[in-house]
Length: 573
Image (cartoon, rainbow, N blue to C red; front, side):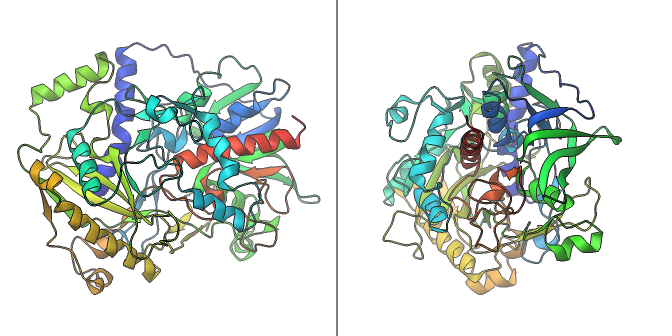
């Protein structure tokens, strides 16, 4: 893993680590002992995966007191061991020709428990595009109520815009309480080059924002903490079981109807069982696990499953259409002494104590320079609509040992552009019937030349940003000496460009594509029902036909809200 991707990972994990430390200090009682699972139990609904969408689905379905709901999670309680630690197959276009590390949340809350917490709904045009492709009910106007349904916006200036925001939902959303000075400087620099301060979760998408995040008072609000913890011990009709991996969806071969799942315990893989669904099975296992589970259950490409001896239930293009936001960093800002955030060991200790005892007013209650995000237009963007094609995030780097020094202390800032709507598509497949083996993942970063063109454009903007008065006066110095020509990027001759530098920004999606029946690549219909199979739905980032223009956690939560209403309506509630 290169230093920048390590830094991105640190942004994701440190608030989780600090939540754990705080819980120990505050002596929070353990009231979340996992329920026991009995072989042969029956439930109305079985939800597979307690991630960004699955926690929402379990909450909303269990609102119906007459329905019994089982939520199964392979990981454990939050915090704890959290990572599926996927590795991609080696490709020449990424990670120096080696495997790429793809962390995904294996824990209650899924990746909402390990991500950077940025609350980014995407662009209204994303959802209108989904609807234009035959996904009835998924236009922006139709999904907006589901974003608002979850939301408890804690920033009054934003919450007051009630057309787009709301209060009172399960999910707290707000700016980080700690004011990071360099994040504010970057914010002002973007304004200097013509990008106004905006709320990109409204109708305006081009501009710069001090982001809102799924946090409250400096503490992460995963979907576990937001949607499960408030109701887990009070709803008798909801059963949450951790440490259980679903290995197969049980489907009647004759009428192609799902009727339950087969499982094994993570701690004892020889201990297996079956549980049964009287109404539906909902798979919310994520972009990697959901297609893997479908293929193990006989739903997938015939040419992949037949050689493994898996009986074919439905021949669908499961695992195709893999999309991701990826980057190749190349512009570094070195900081002078005034701009560096490199305190003494004593000050670091004070900051940690402030985090634990003084309601999170500390650098540890933030994501450093990452809290400033900008969305801009390259010359390839459609100028007729407000639909920027590049997002800038900023990561930090310390000249000290980055595995020891918390990411909020740094002496360099790195520009990380991501292509909001990449053309390149990857895929994943399986080569074994062992459900505990990882699937084969081929991301295909920069497979399409247009993606290279867009990212090269983004660095011109980054250099322009580095020349602003706001940054130069604050002690930022742009290092543009490594900016390549297009052929340098393709050849990978620069140590900061090409294959060595390309890595994920953790927004994998699209492998169980949503689309109407006429779409030969679609796996689920607009009701998120698997084509040709009754009683089985998929609800997570894998159903996105096209990746949303930004971080994907908020859209996954919306998907969980929307499918819950779809299911309730289907069953007369």
